[in-house]
Image (cartoon, rainbow, N blue to C red; front, side, top):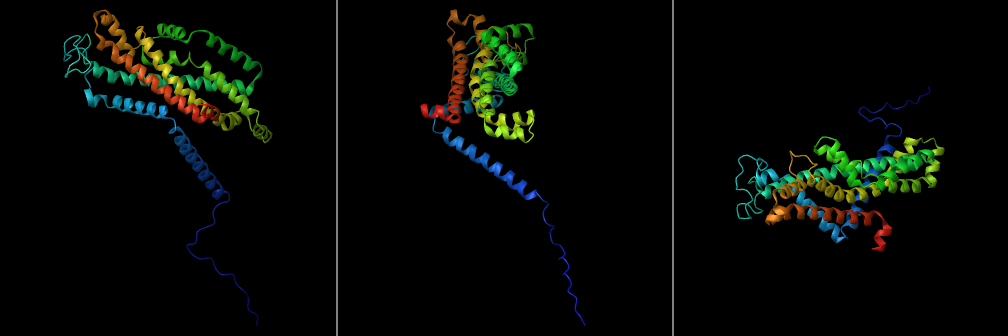
Length: 321
């Protein structure tokens, strides 16, 4: 009598083996996030070594927090012309720390609300400018040939033409609004970014792994999105930080010339109203000094942050300074 060997039945409730490739994919994602966290921590550690950059970042965070809390600090009816609480052009006092404007409104409250418009326009205009410049620079550097020649000649034309003059023309032709100012600044200040990104794209695409990716069947979109763009992003980030300060100054200039949105309060608009009121000739310094100093402080803070970011992301600059 022979005994037959039988396989033991599978245990009930046992988990099935993972699908093929699930574990490697999860491990790859965790490694990617770990590298990103390490890069961010290294970036912050190096950024903290730049004292001027920390001062600029602290000033920007403080100004942004005050601008966001403006309705809580000064109320929501500061911009109302009718029923203003004070008299016209009062000097600074305990009730009005920065005096009043020609309508009797508190200049301190207007300064806080003006920070919202000036910062928002500067951020959006710089983002639009960098987006246009990055797209054009990557396309021109990747494709080359006659396409790059035509695109870079157009870029050179924009570089030769004064950006402020072009922005004034666009703001004059289009309707007066915040979006018009953003568009006018964004479409006139991208050429510098385009040339920098194109040079960086040419340097990246000369590396051997780009040839390997092309040999493995990587198309134009894959090369530009997965290989070129991540390598030019540090340059784009530094350029964005530096462009915000110039965008804020351009917005203040357009508003000072009367080309801004008349329905909102901005620092440049406050200077334009002070000029129309005759604050310069009448000696009402409290009408001119606060918005002018605010523009200078914010522009300086963004410049300090931009220089620090540029030094961290570009090792050559970091060793030379």
